[in-house]
Length: 124
Image 1 (cartoon, rainbow, N blue to C red):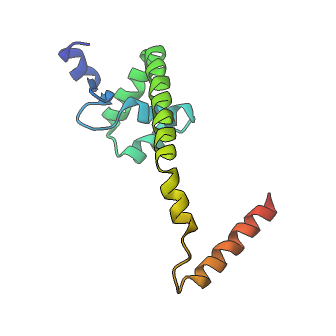
Image 2: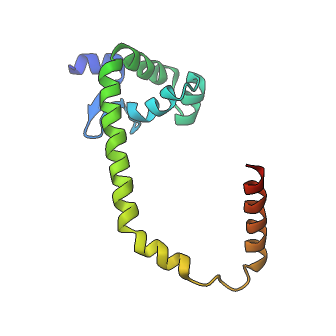
């Protein structure tokens, strides 16, 4: 993509991938909501985008859908691999934290939380 077409479309390629020019918002962030079939006005409000920015992003996705979808699947795969890595790396820490006794003075809050969880489980 040339500099002229980048300015025209409002989409640029950064080290993070395809992004909306002037923001840190990637098209992969937008794709999460496009694939979830959220309305454009919701996506625009969620990311605080201008009309031009959301239109540029959605137009680019529509025009280059197969390329964006391919990159999006790679991003999702890498994110899942990172999540699994950090989950495994921090497993011992999470177990150690879970094994600690409750802090004094939190009995009422813990009882209320337990009741909410039991109620939710019985509704399933």
